[in-house]
Image (cartoon, rainbow, N blue to C red; front, top):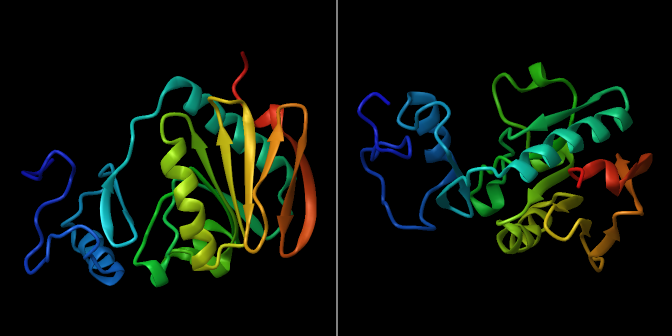
Length: 197
C-alpha cells in the first residue's frame, strides 16, 4: 500500500478532514496525484469519503446476473459500467455504483468521468446496504439522474426510483423496463437480476 492507511488514503496536505467537507475537485485531484491509491475501497458521497462494503456472495451473484441481463438490452451507443465513477458536482460526489448505463464507449471518458447527463440508469445491488442504498436514491435523483434502481437481494425484488414519481417495487415474477434517452429499449425479468435460490 505504499505506506498509506489501510483504507488507501493518505491524509492530503491542506485537507479539511471533516465528514461532509470534501470537495469533488479536491477528491479528483487526490486520485490523479496518487494521494488516493488506485483500487482504494472508498468513494465520495455528498462530500464524505466513505468506505465501500465487502460483497457477500449473493451480492456478487446478483451483480453478475444484473450485468448480463442489462447488457442484453442495451442499444448501440451505450455501455454498462461496473463500479465506475459518476460525477455528481451538485452534491460533491464521485460515487461508484454497482452498475451504470452510460452514453458512448468507455474510451469516451479518458479525461473525465461521466456525469449524470451521460448516465441513463444507476443500479445498486443491496443486501446489508439496503437502508443506505434507499437513502442514496434521493441523492442521485436530485443530482439529475433520471432513474435509480435497487436490486434488493434480501427481499428478492427490484425497487425503481424516478424523479417526481412514487418508487415502484417489482416482484420476482415482474419485468422492469430499461429506459434509455426516454425510450423503453428492453424489458428485463426481475428474476434475471437476482441470484438463484
